[in-house]
Length: 287
Figure (cartoon, rainbow, N blue to C red):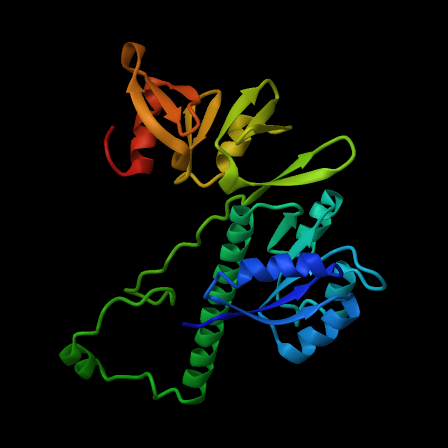
């Protein structure tokens, strides 16, 4: 098993101990070092070459953003900010942080951040292997070449993807959907992870995000949001409701061919008759 090299940076020893306790439970993670200052972090990143850094923002002398500036974007590993101050959230994502953990965080929230970090590292590792292979084939162009007759005998004369040559299939680019939604408050800005949204309701010219026991009001129409969310996960079941399919628990028949969609927390939403096919396509089966 390939373990993800991880560095902990926080000026509070108790905070580092808490992170270390959580990471020791994960067999896919190797903690390569701990730092108590930003200066130590810059040196450790250069010396140890971690793939993920759990980085506090407020530290004496050199803060978390200063660490990013010192190391430089080209050399900086994947970053998950860990802080007690939510006013830095927007700036953190502008600095291309993978996630932003607000203290105190739950074990589940921490695990979700680490899953995202590990996925990012694994994808980057696969991309590097692909680039090395492409470079190798450029240096030795005959290494990957087979005569057409030999390909036919071996049975691997299949369709190639992505080159755009005649007779070949080109994979269309995949659209990018929102992973986080910016919520503006009177004094600050917070970011809501799209995966954590249960459902979205219409509120005049606004939309209301329902996230567990919390709600957030954003200045977006339902139509605008619908185009920005992954249609495999978020379905418009009514002109005033978009639902996260992963939160659906029961679907009950309702008046005149409609249905009631019951979420895991007991929330009941009306699904109009004309939206049924959309939900069936997302589920891949009839209801």
